[in-house]
Amino acid sequence: MRFRWLSQSKNFGKTLDSISSQSRSLGARSIKSLRGLVLVVNFKTYIEATGKRAIELAKIAEEVSGETGVTIIIAPQFTDIEPVAKTVDISVFSQHIDSVKPGAHTGHVLAEALKSAGADGSLLNHSEKRIGSSEIAESVKLCADADLRSLVCADTTEASVDIAKMLPDMIAIEPPELIGTGISVSKARPELITESVKQIRRVNGSVKILCGAGVTTAEDVSKALELGSEGVLVASGVVKSKDPRTVLQTMASKMLSERKGLF
Image (cartoon, rainbow, N blue to C red):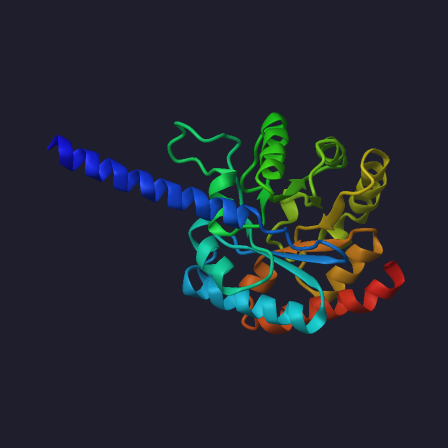
């Protein structure tokens, strides 16, 4: 029994070395560019973007990105990250990470594990997965340490400014009461976008600012950009659409038409 255990231990050690090597290889990849306007699609836990359907939607996003030149980022569920990342060449984000380091944290998700699975970044502090300020700051740092981009959601101007000081790569301004309503924040509360952009730029000149909550049409996208954002965070308007390709194409095309006047 002792020799059998030793043999198993050696094999287990080789497996760990293999996983570690793969993680270092994936971690060495350069993060895909965030230049220009950005369109982020959160798959949430919609059945329309689960399993094989997540891969199908990811392929559509990749094709639209290639056709238009607009940066499209997708955020599938944890279990779909690896198969999606292996299939497409656009940025794949997680919907959340836990602010823990490797160790005894059963049920938590490591930044290193996401990187190993092929993720390029993570959403943080979405209204459906709120975390505290200290956890946001730690998670942003963990993302940076793991060579992952961070996209942090904020519901108020004050929260946006506090988060901007934590130096994330992106901030998405989205009041939770408008999420999933089809009523865009850029229409319902345009002053939230303009004031947040103004205040964020006073403390952080490089973070990319996105508009979220209720963004479902090309008109919503246009208004968001007009108010000073550099992209949008969308979900049900694309994922639950009967024709997600057309929705993405119209949004991306609107970004292209707005880009000349912005850059």
